[in-house]
Length: 299
Image (cartoon, rainbow, N blue to C red):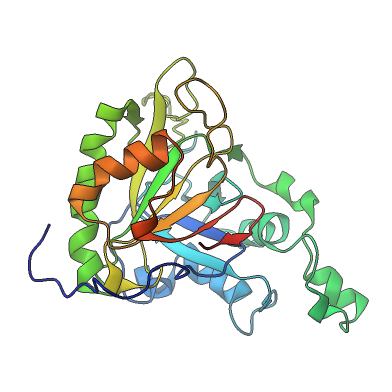
């Protein structure tokens, strides 16, 4: 455990989870970002594009359907045409992976928003809107056909706030916890997947978490600000819907995203055993959880 970090050891953790319908993780391949992630790369980035559409004043802004846009350290997929710049993204808790979002066309960002991120049904507070306005704010699955290669997420995702550009505590704790998870996961039977989740180039092997007849797979990545820096380390464990436990029965937390705070390196092995292998919540560090249908759970 790094020394000298001002961590809140006594404040209430239970219930300190953001209300969101979906988290979108942008695969940047970087381990840190500016305090405002939309300012990364001088504003030329997917997070900025999405916040332009979904943020306050955006065409699809909906205060009753919050989309949390985060950057992640996961690298983007590599297409058959690597000269075409694309960005990848994870949608959670929908457990979808969007491998190829071309950076030269805003149409793909629009398709992502309209096909996957808008609500299927509007909140009752929107009942007074005109029919055309309601239609604009509602998901249209036809747009999904414009996005190539979308697939289900089959890897367990361990997301660790490592946003040093926002707060030193997470900037210090994030990499420490990432190393600890990557060291301990193989001992528990998880194959730690690194590199792009999809690689279609001719010269590189396919690296995917969908390989059958192998141990369970996991990816460990750093993410940008999720709130609660004073409770570092902050992690979210997303357990895919088809995950099983050792006897091949359904995992009790399959389809959940479980938030923990005050995680120290000494806790990592226990979290892997209790939550990832056995499907139990560790109450002392529990901030909350989200189900695949978007329901937020608090103890």
